[in-house]
Image (tube, rainbow, N blue to C red):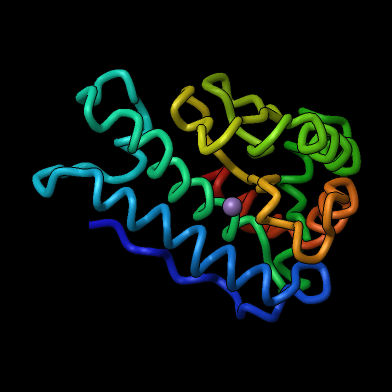
Length: 198
Ligand code: MN
């Protein structure tokens, strides 16, 4: 059985950028909902972790492929999302080693932020924008729709921003651009770097 991860910060600690009501609704209703639906869809004898399930959807039995893609993706993607954010000012600081990697791949951290914002704006409908590491160890900004996850395409996800309306509508209404600008100020670059080097 899969379990909802513990939120790595207090529900009110991302205020004012992410309001407590949004965090609580997003975590306790939406994220929990994916966990519940995933558990309901899977046979009890499945002995794979979420990475293994999502890694190669084609090898899964027909009757669980879609639930894993949608509910397993929803579970996994939100795990990465919460890990991508922090109220801690120290954790928002990027390490010198990881800044060099970012500069090599995107010229600057500001440029990467622009690419993430632009990608997030271009997601049509519901989805996600990601920073991922590809098989050649290069970094890429990619978009996914619905609850699709780049882990299913062979990428290692490092950071993601949820651009489903439930992620921002209570506070930002339809202003996804302002939401993206603000969320990019609370990224846990320490954690993102850890995922890259890990
Ligand atoms: Mn969400």
